[in-house]
Length: 168
Image (cartoon, rainbow, N blue to C red):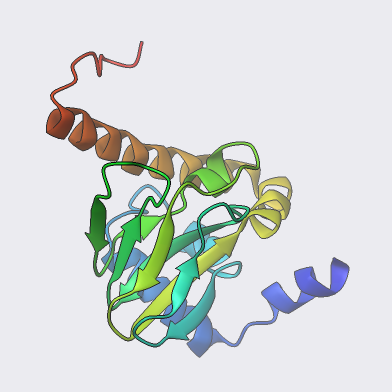
């Protein structure tokens, strides 16, 4: 674990900036200062996927938050009778609950629909980050909760369900 911590801190400046720019452009982490975003970017991993690659399998442990920097993905819930799907594109995310909630199995399957560049944050890295940078981690969690809240509101509207409430 100590080796990983040292590794995060020793990322070359140009690679760190390459991670920071898409996070800032997305508008998702507007509450973070540049310094806080740089701290957070140190735990962000980047991976390229070809069209058709499975990004997340349903019923697998949901252990990472995913951010689509480039490309697109389709999310399906094989266990649901509705058989619906959700297509996500640039700047969109999935797996927020991996950083917000208890360990759980993913109800969705995610597949790249185009060659994609996905930025990820693993649960265990975020837990360590939360210990090392608690104030920044709290801001990240609040930003993620805004995304989840908006998603829940959209789903409620689509389903014609009321009662989203004010959250109080």
